[in-house]
Image 1 (cartoon, each protein chain N blue to C red):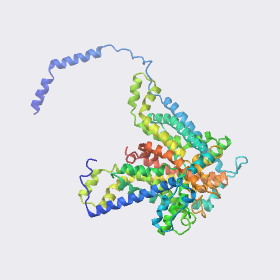
Image 2: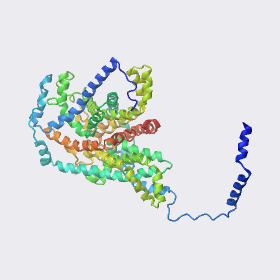
Image 3: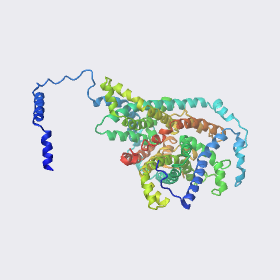
Image 4: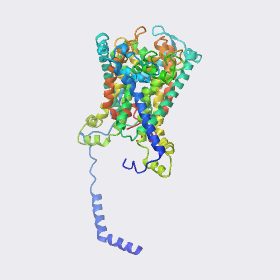
Length: 332
Length: 292
């Protein structure tokens, strides 16, 4: 083997060939070096960072004016008492008062209870719906129908449901009453049931979002894994829990975090439906904040509550962005 | 998709499941669409007819719902007595204005953020996105104080600026994703051909145009549907549709017919827009985390 190889090797590297190659290369090396070319004047210079910063600047400046500047104002306001005209520095009093404020504390409890109920129902119904709708013959039609509630203004949705829940002429009240789920009083009038009423509205409006997210996730569940599992004799349930759900998990995490933060963000339907009542049963923290700041115009106290709420949101946001950045999450 | 039916279940359990799933979907559709049907139909009913319900437990009496003579009087009330055309214009200006501002500034920022790397970029990004996620009420407390000192409360420019607080970060965040998908090579090729840097940027705009168009619509949708900002910062001079609808609820006299009509007027245009940009809706509503 080695002999033949060397033989071939020798034949390829014929003496003249080697010689010619060297001759060419010496020629090139021997050529006098030309002076470095002057940079072409008409062409663009290399990308300068400054250029991009100029493009960015207007947006950043605008955003700073409407978010950063107010944020510092918020911090200042949280240490003040009274209105813009006559402000008085009170130090940490606003925060200390919060610690003994029952409504503030119960606002947190109610907020988490409300979110937990919403998320549990939305995720379980949403995923189930996505699994059923996925690959159905009518998928396009069904998805379009599901989109409808999300297009409605939450405040208008609240008003619509106020009509539907009405104790004398509401159709949903009639349905609940006829099914024996409810007495003759409206669902909104009792402190026991009012929370379920607002949860139902949120579930009505936003379950489809979870469904759409889950549907996008389902399209990416590897078919071969499912088939392998089926060939191994797994039942449909086993298949769902062993293959589909784990694959959906990253997308669902995003969905849950998004909805959780939206529960902090949107209180339109609660303001319209109950305004926090009856007997503060639906006064989740943002609703309480709205009341303190824009009904009683106690802006200092409101600012303290808002600051605490913002800090919690920022922590949640940090978690969410961490999930976004995971390569598996977006399927990028 | 081709391998869809290579392996499938054909057991009694599976058949029961598929029947159950059909039942579930039908129930869910009724639950989702019934409020719309009731809103739409009630807006054409006289109040006495709209309030008619069958006796409790009388399921056969559901037909009562369809017994009415259609009337347009609630819509006439809205536009003749309640000045709804004015509120509609307000909504349109506030939502459209903030959407256009957000997308113009946002696309410039998104483009440069997508093309340049610098220290602290991820922090800048987090600040941008956290602005979008902050609870509206919490943002509004200082914004209200500032706007009041600038006399912006109750004006359309104030409302446009307020909507920009959530639309601009949204636009930057989403559009950056779009620009990330456009290869830098295209701009380089343009510049080799003698285009300036800004001309190169303009040359890739057609590639992201459908996305930008869809996100103008989404920004309009978010702003149009807002209630809190409009109720506080727009109160007085810049009343928008959701606020005007809410004001039809008066302690003594809730004008249900007009409310249902106002609901239709507020919701219908957004529904049509939503269908137009359906393709981008999931991406938009999940802040770009999920792509369909």
